[in-house]
Amino acid sequence: MIVQFSLLKKCGLYLKNKVILLRNLIFQKLRARKYQKVPEYGLTLNKRVPRLVISLTSFKDRINEVHKTIITLLNQSIKADEIVLWLAEEEFVNKEKELPQKLIELKPYGLSIKFRKRNIKSYKKIMPAITEYPDDIIVLADDDLYYKTNWLELLYNSYLKNPEAIHCHRAHKVCFDENNKILPYEKWQRAVTVQENNEIYLFTTGAGVLIPHPGKDMFFQDILNENLFMELAPEGDDLWLWAMALLNNTEICIIPQNITELIYVNPARDFGITSGLTLYKSNKNGGNDLQLNAILKHYPELEKIMTEKRSKND
Image (cartoon, rainbow, N blue to C red; front, top):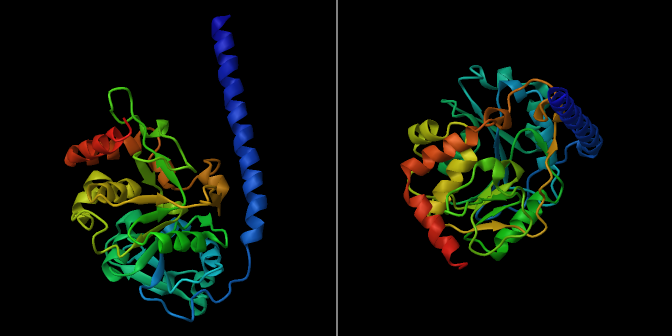
């Protein structure tokens, strides 16, 4: 009898989760319709100093959909100085000849497509941008999301009030146990809207992160150490950037009116209903914790920095 009850309970939970997934899928598809617009010219005609540069990357499995994301980046209420899509030559040997026409057609609207020899996965949206635009303002985006029209404006306005901080829409509060040890990633407080003093927050780059002068004084000296970040956190670019900012004592600011809702281009894939590679799937079942622990082991001073910061609340 107990076994039967347990099976029924598991079946009920499974069905409940499937219903939630399907409901979210339908909701996301309805929401996505408003973002599927014709692109407008997406760059400012009055160039800034420093430049405001949106940076993202993609790969073979997503290249036929990334134009949908880029259209929403072109259609922002304030315009960037550049929008750059970074791709790996390892995946696209013939470069633009291998890209879909719908993507190429966005170049006259302001899209730049740049290639990098080595494939460093999701880090492609970050590391080449730091090298090429060290004195400018980099805004990181993902290739599988629709962005609201005020997404960039909210980030930029927050930057203008505090130009020496990293600004983000979405962040997770790092949580600790009674012995001041970091809890597993899944137990952190997700997508917070209120930032508390002297707490530790991990910004998530996909939802939108603005980094001023990324090549100067924002990150610890190892930020561009390709062999090291591919060894410690090959799928954890958010964790690596966060650690490099924390080691450098850089302020992280969750912006006012932050947008935490993620509106997916392909929600069936991102909710796990259909197949397809995502960082979420790669980091499920403890993948984030393995990478976080590797970073903490390599940089033991991180735990001291976090303890000292949090002790100010006592």
